[in-house]
Length: 219
Figure 1 (cartoon, rainbow, N blue to C red):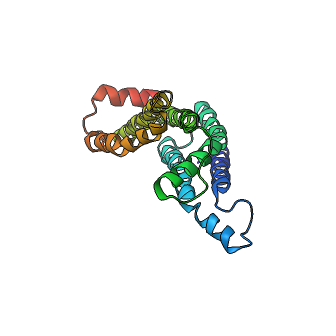
Figure 2: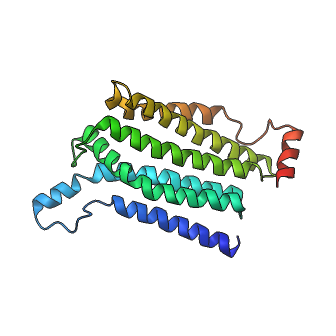
Figure 3: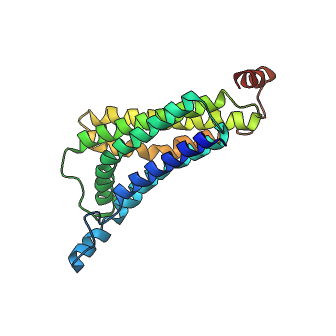
């Protein structure tokens, strides 16, 4: 891997690490009383939720790098766009995590604003990042020669498109009278993604010769 590519990956990792630091519990400082400690610990479910979402996008970028290797101009632009988005997305994610943590566990400070508006803003960020990831894997699919790598890139692209589509549905629900239930749309993801991953030809065993030829030409 070339020096500039390595530096870009280091920058991306640092941006995701910074985003996680904004989620850390007790961000206002060390607890001075037991009540403050209890309140900080009550934010753990919200932190776990936010951390898992950030980790999902970061791991997606790591998997993409394994397929794309060095990358070109499009890779740089899309990676920097992903960094830009995650540093903005972290704010609605913090609010979403707080609302979700309180909803499911009864712990934490929660969110005191309009839940429908929160779900719409959160969904917008989720869709934008998911589409960026889908574009990265589209770029990778145009470069791969090996059938398994080609199919892995295509499969990952579909997964991120499923994530984006789910976010769009959630946004649509948030704008209806049932907006407070928009977050539940994301609960369908384990089913939709699970069905896809079980049925998809990840090893590229069904790829035709023309498809492999197109991949080789794209590289």
